[in-house]
Length: 327
Ligand code: AHR
Image (cartoon, rainbow, N blue to C red; front, top):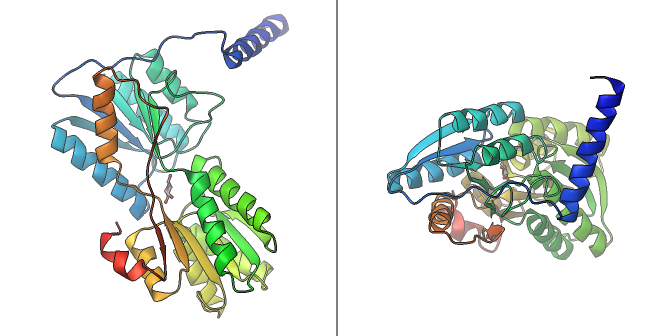
């Protein structure tokens, strides 16, 4: 590309996105879904390295089967690039609709746009894409999932009431660039700053993974021996952090308050034992809502931009009683 054509291309791209942002340009319409008895649907999962993902996948498979639909399932194995390729492969296989759990907010935009261009509707599950680059009702049908900002807020609000003088926080963030990591941080940090009296000593990613969470917690506990609170963006990292706390010769639930999000059986069990102080559930049972929303869309209904999941809350007051119901 010559310097002139490169500049012209960049100027027109910038002009187009400015027009799009102003709402004055209507790009191709959201693809429709024809009414059929049986569908071939894609589910592009991000990874399968934790109980939350496995519960989500099982719920989707179970409900695809209940409806008698053919499910094309892919596992991106923690790679956004593979997930884009997985969606492209679903497009090539001619699926009727794609359920996508986008690993990160920006890198999955090309996948959403490619499906739209191919005339295949996309429903985002559990994680969102960057709202300035793709929009529900225009580029994809809807986002089905929890309010991650509220999850972070609920943890902070619980802490503000139950800290008992503890105040120095280590925060273990989820996958960098993912909507739950961005929003759980925002919800928690804003609410904790508003409450006052707390300090976030360090905030670092543990990539939503148990062993990475353990390693990061170990390093941060060494760097900040005065830390007395660990807030983890998911159960896996909270459980990893408990190992790090114990390796440092401290007692989780006594010396250090551990807080988590997800509400899997293991974490709710640890909450009943007192090692985790509080857990906000992030409901992974997507199957019923996903296929019901798809059916409503096929009937021609306009779907709301966000189909919200309702999450429970666990602490010492209810963890034992709720354990049997946790996933
Ligand atoms: O997007 C939801 C998050 O993704 C869950 O909290 C986490 O455990 C999963 O990997």
